[in-house]
Length: 288
Image (cartoon, rainbow, N blue to C red; front, side, top):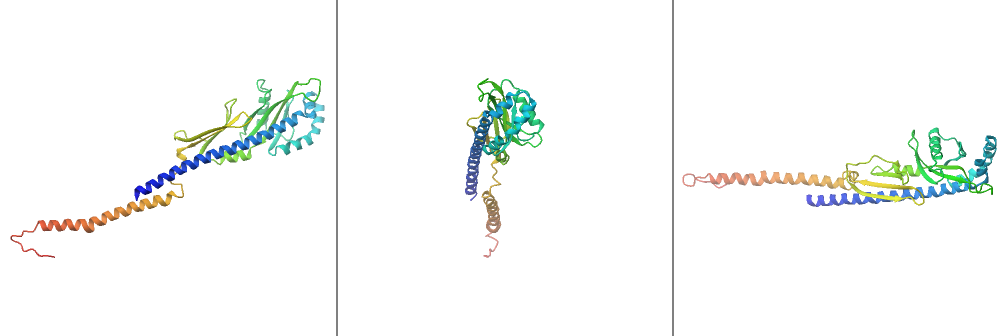
């Protein structure tokens, strides 16, 4: 009985491990799909916004008054951008001097983050994605940085005139990452090797599964690692009754052994001692 229970519990543990591996793989697939879909929308928004004459005129002009007048003509363009990207938070344009928020005012730390990227001469003429973690709330945002080149005017055609940053919420992604308490997730920038989301790892426990997925058409990848410690036998709904049954069986066998010893073995042993002590020559044995 105990051997059978042990075998069943071992199979349950193996089944839990397989379930965790499938859960880890499925979560990674969902994150990949979520980021890939969001990245495609952000690229479309960036292309649409930066290719418009209004945007290029805005970036080409150095006059603050002209900037203000041109900004008022962006409402339709912003509405189209928001229809492309429902999670759109803001669009930041950079005219090589200062950033301008086209939709709303963003926190100072987020603005400083974008300005730092815009001023990076090694990166400001490339298109790439970045994850930004807001220090106060730990909320992750996905950003897409792209240069803007003159295309709507024949004069200075192809000239680099500024940059654009598309900022989006990642509520679905945040829920996927924060709901996984039984594995470690990492979202990496393959270019800078920065890690954007990292639950506390269980380095002292053996890994049972590890997978890395590259996000298509981005510089990002997502890693998932499942650890043995998260496979909890006692928390499984099927293992509880079996463990209880095994313990009851152990107590039952112990009780049977105790009863056999006191009801059968001990009286027989006592009777044998009495028989051995009989003196058949002098005593008159009585049968009872």
